[in-house]
Image (cartoon, rainbow, N blue to C red):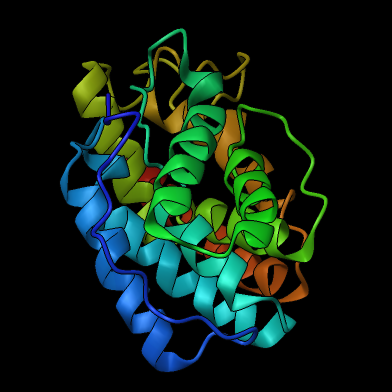
Length: 231
């Protein structure tokens, strides 16, 4: 589990209401340093995942005209407290991350008036937490994180997690859940049906939905190729 508290450097970069590129770059160095103090829960939630979410969140923020000074820290710190997939505390991970991020940002001198919206964006990003995203910025971070579970990278993350959990890739008798209800507690491919395709339908920004449709189609093509190879 990641540290609940991390020690920020002493000097806070200057901030403007629109977050200048210089300020954003300075804060990103500090967010990276904060994450370096912690270990990922699994390969699907490592620093590469965080960087992808940040990249996507920035792109969505630009298109959707969100507040970067909320989206950027929320995207970087959304998994500050990582809980393993099979841990009973999993549904609380985003709340714990929001609390840890708020403490870090407060100590680091981040604008106090932004902390509630940042905390909300972090808490609402999680699928399992079932927290409704009330702000545009929370919707952007939520979509960015959920998009990372879709498409080619989503497939890779699904099977990486399955390997960690020691589960088979698919049911030999019914790989694609044609005659049985899907159970992703048993097989990796079942996770496509229990969560991933459903996740694509939960995206709420226009830009996120458009990208989600493309990534969901990539996943369907993968399943078609898998079916052909399995015979």
